[in-house]
Image (tube, rainbow, N blue to C red; front, side):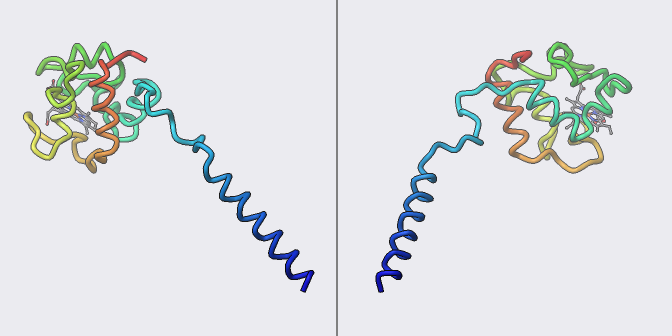
Length: 132
Ligand code: HEC
């Protein structure tokens, strides 16, 4: 009986230890106040979805490059691709929607950019489209 009580005590101690561990701040989530970075967060989305393949160093469809902030501000044949502080008014965001203002939804001929990634780009534009 004494042996069993000891076992139970050890178990309770172990559970309390685990529960205490759960209260720690999760070190994996980035701090919410952190700015979205063009080079670390936005450009990799363009690369993953082929945007830089058609709007980069090799090809510049509609005269647009998306691989630098300066190029996005300059835009293509239809004018600036982004308007800092106004994501929903930016052509770049509008062209990724199901009903784009010009021609085809981007990325042309490929699956749409998931909403979560579009929101990362939106946040970056709304934070002022910094070259960070
Ligand atoms: C396979 C090639 C291809 C890919 C990939 C592609 N585009 Fe395009 N993009 C085009 C073409 C061609 C046009 C001209 C309009 C049309 O044909 O719909 C265009 C036009 C645009 C325009 C309008 C530019 C202007 O000034 O008229 C924007 C903004 C744009 N693309 C953004 C993107 C983004 C963002 C991605 C990635 C999510 C992307 N594109 C991926 C080929 C591509």
